[in-house]
Length: 464
Image (cartoon, rainbow, N blue to C red; front, side, top):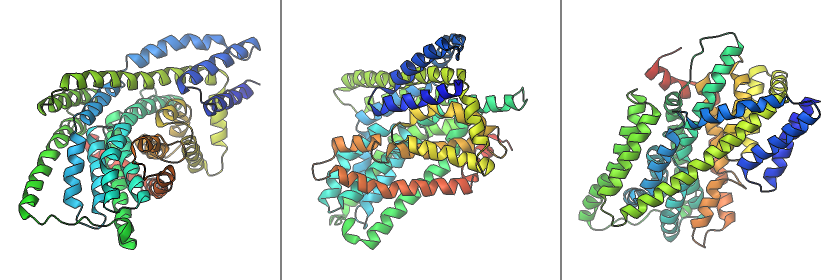
């Protein structure tokens, strides 16, 4: 009977989410109502809720999760300091004379911004405002233009430093230790955010390469959809543009080396590197000499507080859900369901990947991490042959599709809000479909070749 309450709890939350209620309050509120009902029927031990204050305190004092507001601050201040605009303008002019060159420039800028900001929304809005009008003016197909911009913006989720990887790393470490304890290992190993950062680099570069190949192939098959920009007749302007490109690349490259380089080299933890990045981004913005720097700084702090509060309130609601779900025996129910699936470990992993992909239609990456990963990851990691870093990157790449697949991908809404009137919602939805397929192809490649995720962490930090 208690397991039935666990199933009804999940269904009730899904119904509330479809009805449009806020995720954080839905998770906490519905779970609390079911806890009260279960206690009334003597199916739930209300003592489970006694662990809630301690868990919330652990979340709010986590050194790992402290990196989230710092990375958000760094990304927002870079977006407001027009560094992204300079990058787009400079690289766009450099590659624009090639057929499909402007599309290639968008992908490269998306990768650079991902490695220096880690925020999808800011990247999508900035690139949409600057690039889409230029691509349309030069004759690009609206579907290709919107698809390239939306997909490139989501690279900020998989390429470090990514706030999604920070949250996933914390959740996965807890799950990995729980899995080892269940197997009688009382000195469990840890999987760190640094491991996930290193593991995500090669898969992230694979996605960049696949995006660029698609743009090149589209320009070759349909030249009218991705025409070249006429070259500048003045050769001196070419030299000036190279200098402009070097100047535009300096700021993000310095940040990438300072933040990501220090993490991968083992010099700093992600949290320490995030603080360096936040200070560095502030100094870069100040050195640009904008008269409204003080105002931009205040706006950045407010935006950072809003985004951080949203993430942590969802985490608190997910913590309540996790306690109540386990109190009803839901984790045992999931364990039995995954263990009984045909195909063993591969069958269970495939079922989880499919469920996460489908949940991406109605929930964003943070919500899925907070709700799903603590339940399924300990079970998967206790199965033979499942490497925690490989599983984490599989989940991260899968969750990346939640940002762009129709109809509720948030990146599509960001783009719709800033796109010129010539680009319709249909253009955006149709244009993004090939990139969703590309991400699924990359996911299959990563499944078949797990070394893409595990080789670099092992080379940097050792381990079997």
